Length: 86
Image (tube, rainbow, N blue to C red; front, side, top):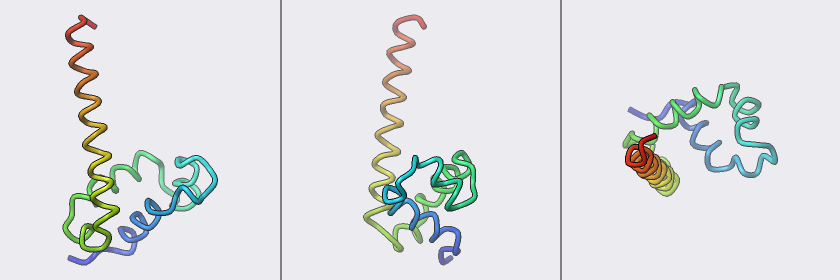
């Protein structure tokens, strides 16, 4: 199934948001009219699709690597917190 216009818009935004000049959350609200939470939900689902990879493989693989690294960091912090009795 080809990417929707919204999907393409999300990937384009993610590729260029640093040029916005504002904080990312502000840019999400002003450019996309989405809450940051909703944006990240949609983006998370989108980067798992083969169509997103076909559309922009470098961007999608970079986003997956960042997501996976954050998940590993959260897991490591949780392990440390559990081990320390918190």
